[in-house]
Length: 392
Ligand SMILES: Cc1cc2nc3c(=O)[nH]c(=O)nc-3n(C[C@H](O)[C@H](O)[C@H](O)COP(=O)(O)OP(=O)(O)OC[C@H]3O[C@@H](n4cnc5c(N)ncnc54)[C@H](O)[C@@H]3O)c2cc1C
Image (cartoon, rainbow, N blue to C red; front, side, top):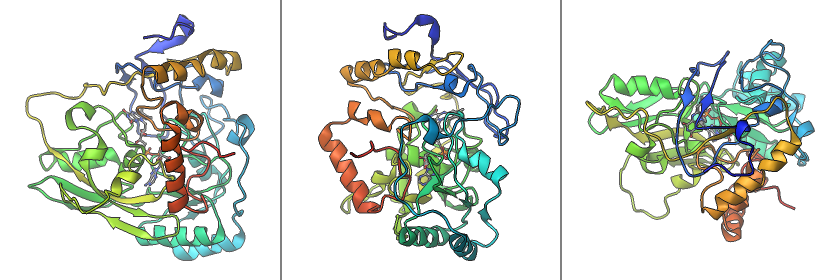
C-alpha cells in the first residue's frame, strides 16, 4: 500500500490531525480512513510549519507564518482579465450596497486557503444575499471580463477556494437561508451558503439527518460541498451527492439563472444538467441553492465512522523540499493510475492538482471537459487556473 520509494518515516498514513483551527469553527479531529489510493498529498511543510496546521485571519499570528503568494511559488501566468477599477467597485456597491469588502485585513482570511498553502491577492470580496444579486454581479463581470472566484466556507484542500491572482472573491456566506423542508419526504431546499452543521441541526430537530457529514462541517457550506462533491463520513451509508442532490439553482458565467431546483426523486426529462455542476469546483457556474434528500434519523446503528474507501497520504517535512516532492511526484500519481484509481477521490483538483488530471481521465474526456467549460463560460472568468490543466 505504501509506495516503496517514499521514505517511511516521512509518511503518515491514515492520520490527519488538525491541531489549530483559530478563526474557524472546525473542530480538532483525527481522520482515520482506509483505502487503496493516496488522495491527499499535503504540502504543509511548504508553509514552513511542521504538521501543525493553523488557520488565522491575521498574518502576524505566532502560529501562522506568512503564506507565500501563489503567483510567486508556482509557475502560473495571469490571464488577460480586466483589473478591478474604482468604477467597478462603485457598480458592485450599487448591486449589493454595504456588502463590498475592500478592507485588506478582512480580505486576508479569504485570500489564504485553510491549509495555508496558497495565497491570492484579491482586492475585493462580494457578499450577495440572493441569486438575483449573484446574477447581476456575474453579468457585470462577464461584460467587463473580470475573473471571479466563488467561495464557500474556504475549507477546500486543493487551493480551489482562493484566488490565484486578483480574482474577485464571491462569497456565499450571506446566502444562508433555508427555503423549505418537507417533514414527510425529508427534502430540504436551502441557499448555497448554509453551513453544513447548521443544516444538520435543523433537520435533526425534525427527525432527519443530512446525507453527508465531514470534519469541516462547522465551516463548510452546502454549496461548497456540492461544488466539490464532498464525500465524508456518511458516504458508504447514503452514497454520493450525485445521488442525494435532487436539484440545483446555478448562476452561469453570463448571469443566466439556471433553475433546476426540482425536488423530484425521479425525473427523466432529458439531460440531468445538475450533475454537471456537482464536483465542478466553481468553474462552470455559481451554485446558489440546493435541493437535497435527507434521511430519517437512524435509531440504533452508529454510522459515524464508516469510511469511504479513500486513503489520505500526508507527508510532513520541516520545510518545503523540492527533492522530497520529486521523490513523491509523479510517482504516487503513476502508481495510482496503474491501480486504476483516482488521483483525487475526495477533494477535487482545485489549483494544486489540476496538472495531474490526465492520470485519471483519458484525453477524450479531458477534451470534452474543456469544451463544456468553453460553452458555459466562454471568457473563462469563473475560477480560472483551477480544475482544468492550463492550455498551451
Ligand atoms: C477538517 C476538515 C475535514 C474535511 N473532511 C472532508 C471529508 O471528509 N470529505 C471531503 O470531501 N472533504 C473534506 N474536507 C474538505 C472540504 O471541507 C470540502 O471540500 C468542502 O466540501 C468544501 O466546502 P466549502 O464550503 O468550504 O468550499 P470552499 O473551500 O470555499 O470551496 C471549494 C471549491 O468549491 C467552489 N465553490 C464553493 N462554493 C461554491 C458555490 N456556491 N458555487 C460554485 N462553486 C463553489 C470553490 O470555488 C472551490 O473551488 C475537509 C476539510 C477540513 C478542513
